[in-house]
Length: 144
Ligand SMILES: [Zn+2]
Image (cartoon, rainbow, N blue to C red; front, top):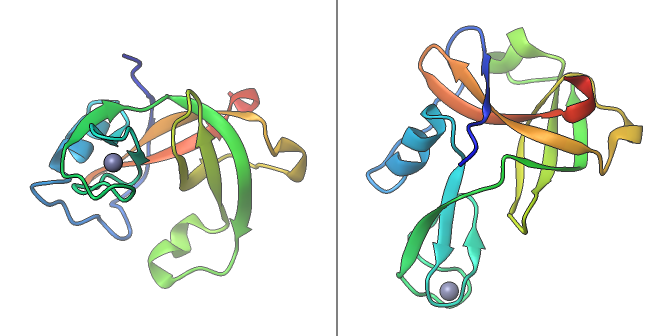
């Protein structure tokens, strides 16, 4: 089990996620430094975000599994024009990461200043700790 690096972020999350009874294990794990999601017990399909129903075979036999703490930057964009709630953070980078170990592809905040030459470069997943709870993000390994 690998604990994700923790980064302190200012203020509260601009759009705090709605936590349900089903998604609580995800948020509790993230607060604890672990990135988890669901995998179908019947066919092995991974889901991200977590789902209580397999999108491949419709099975409800799902299990929580820990995801890799590293991956590769598949794509990113730098956001300059933002909704008001994100104004304090702009400009910032959002990226698509392919997690290692056959993990899912996910989208998250990319800390730092990624450039086109960073595509397919290794990233480390992070817990972004805000005053009201965690979000997940990533940072290029070489920028650490
Ligand atoms: Zn399935």
